[in-house]
Length: 411
Image (cartoon, rainbow, N blue to C red; front, side):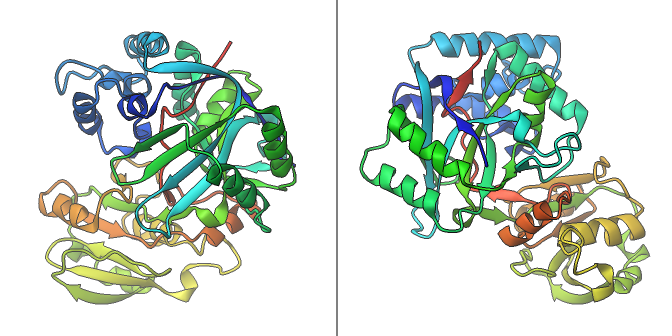
């Protein structure tokens, strides 16, 4: 049983024009501070002024230290300005129906948003929790998000969850609601997706959606493990969340760049112990679409690496995933990079192409690039069912939830 409760004090844009000015990508969708700063020059009212306030500076390169007292105070001031601006309004006791779609008629994701309960997250202390995280929580990262919540007195980041919805009960209820009403807010993002929200304030509709979600046995955290952990750190009872039927959701690849000085010729022959190796030649980039098809680029030409059966246990849902195989067999055993958090590894989301990765290698900013196939939704859910954690940086859920469409103000 999953408990969903209304947002007591929701802060939303006053109209779609304001939503276009305010909303933005999540803080973790960027490759660096310069990308954030550039976007702030185009959209000076962006929610990034709050979530990444250290980049809200007059000139490029003059960033504040992320998480510093000065940056947090700037975030607090920017949040106050947003609340007091004519671009936002407060809505009491609300859920929201949230649809993300694009011109491709096959891409449509729809869910229900509100407040989920911290006590329902599965942890060592609550092993029967019904909200299952897909990765371990790193305390410094969660603390950074907690500091932002404390200084802004608000939940800006939304935790994105998948539910199985086997009989399409939630999907049917969402479709019925959305098809009979015009959305309250509509905004297009940088990647061509249209985000639409319907604010749900009728008690009857709230009860209906909460009742449907209560019949779901489990939810799987797709994006936002550290956002929920931050709320728990502060002793809060709830966190801002949205629940999507899993079959409407998509997962895109999460690739890697490797920064080491060791030449490829030194370990090329070692690849054969764990992978079948195929030369692909001087192509723009190899973007795998099937499980156990891995791209590797070290300059001049791309290779296809196919993991040998001995590299994983087929009954272990984590070991089957190519990101885990690459970490254990290529980075760990061959390159000696055993810690996925090693600074020599750079994780690159699906908003960057294989051609981008090639340019990084050819430009001398990385030694090697690795492209991976997308994790399937069934692989993702099976890892959660087995009470295991996904390999770090292995799932890039698409489309991404828009930041700033709904903010929960705290008392």
